[in-house]
Structures are given as structure tokens and as C-alpha cells.
Length: 102
Length: 102
Image (cartoon, rainbow over all chains, first blue to last red):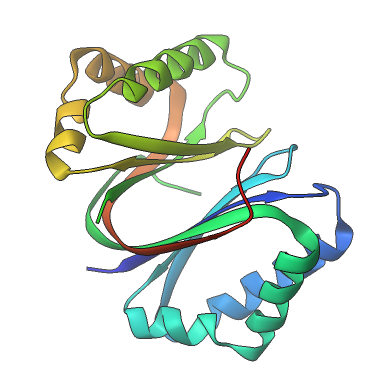
């Protein structure tokens, strides 16, 4: 079964355009990673966000975590962008759906 | 390690007050469930939402899934409120955090 990385965060400044540009770049890079299966991401106007990325192995997750471009973003995230965040790495046990996402 | 239920959904009508009232009631009920550990929930103005609830066992998750009040909400969700949704049940492998949530 695949793995999920749950990233729950709060931005200091929900309007930060530097953050927006970085987030867009990271989403582009992550989609090209080996073992990447998909992503769900929502952020509200208060800057609270949840992003769940799906992966076929823990190795793929570790590789993306250690990616140079991602490390730079992680550091800026800690220093500048996030008031706080938490990350949960989990293994999928089952999933089901209703309707079809666009 | 605890379990996470990832609920990714899109509302047909992001402004639905009936949905808002139900969601508030469900959050109140879920917090009183045995085995409930916590919740993270974000919905944006377009009606896209991710809610992650955390549990100490699969049994606790199954019990909440089968709760009568929850079953009514699930049915109305399918019939009326959600354009689509998906649910992933996963077992936490590791977690880490930066900063402290309010």
C-alpha cells in the first residue's frame, strides 16, 4: 500500500508572494520525483494549510526530503514562512472515494 | 503508533449553511469519541477541504464510522453536499513538528 505525507502548516503571512512562488516551484519539482503518486493541497485565507502527498515507498519520501532544492525551501520555511508546522508520515491501510475529482 | 483518517472533499456549495451546521456538530461529536486523539481541518473559499483526524486504534475509527449520527451526516454528504470526496485510512510511522500550534 502507498504512503502519505501529511503536512499541516500555518503561514505567518498568508499573502506572502515569495512563499507562493516557492510553493508553486516545489509542487512542480515534487511531481517529477520518482515514486510520487499524487497530491491534495488546501490553504485557507488565514494561511492554514494541509497538503497530503502520496508515495510508493518510504525511500521515495526520504529522497524528496533530502532533495537540495527542497532543503533550501525547508530552511526558508522554518526561518521565514511558517508560524508552525507538523508532518506525519503514514502508511495507507485502505481508501475509498465517492464521485470523481475534476 | 496512532492512525490518521484523511478526508479530502469538495463541496457543491461552499456557502451552504446547512453543511456548516452539520460539520460543526460532527466535530463536536467526534471529539467525544473514545480513541479520538485530535483533528486538523482546512477548507478554502472554493469549498475544497482536507480534514485529518487522529485515532489510537482502527477499532475507534470503525466505531465512529458506524455512529448513527455520523451515518446520517455521511448520507447527506453523499446526496447533497459533496461534489466528490476520498478517504484514506493510514497508520502513522513517524511525525515531527516545528513551532507550536496555538
